[in-house]
Length: 297
Image 1: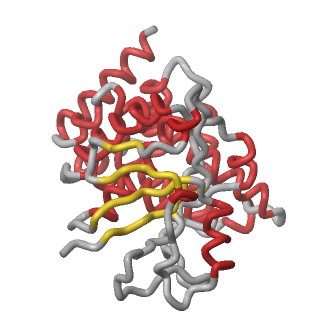
Image 2: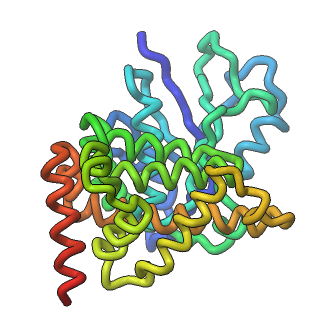
């Protein structure tokens, strides 16, 4: 028998609708076997040995939660759903814990028992987040479908998504920068044999490819090459030169990489270009042609 699981969604807030009853109605997800339900309406009295104050702390941060029955791969699907929120709206939805109601003999939520993989977010992101509508949830579902396909691909597509996810989990700014920059290299990097044969400068070529792919945008070549220079100095032992004593500045540097990677993924997914990452030669030709076209304009 599959276990019923509740996954509180931190920071998700929905727009009020003209019909108050609709505000707490479940949203059934067609993308996988789950629904988004009002966390306030859930009866959590079945948690033996858990203080009401502990559950109340979850309620304070989570107005909504995912309700599903356990199946193989459900944790991956919940992660992809949260990534869909992040890529589409840069929305700070995160996961809190797994709750097992109905008397199931599992370790319930406690203050010391949270998910190890919690998507990182800043307090300012929560304050500035817009309210989402149920129509927005439909867009999230469509984005989830593309992410699901990308996650099932081999090679660079899978690697880029894996590294993006690890960067979003990373609580340390240095770790986030390394994961995000590695994800960019998975997408735009030079094929190793070609790099050795033609002595291609990696940083310049990747930066030109990203700038050309996103053009017209605020991410021109100089902006991206400066970001890559920061990454290179961190990797090659000069972190003490570029790192700031103010942790807020370091977090903002990591967020700069996230914002660049987000717009890259948004375009890859909405225009179905992630399929170009499967075949190495097709990927090389695709980004070379875009870069060449931009140079000729």
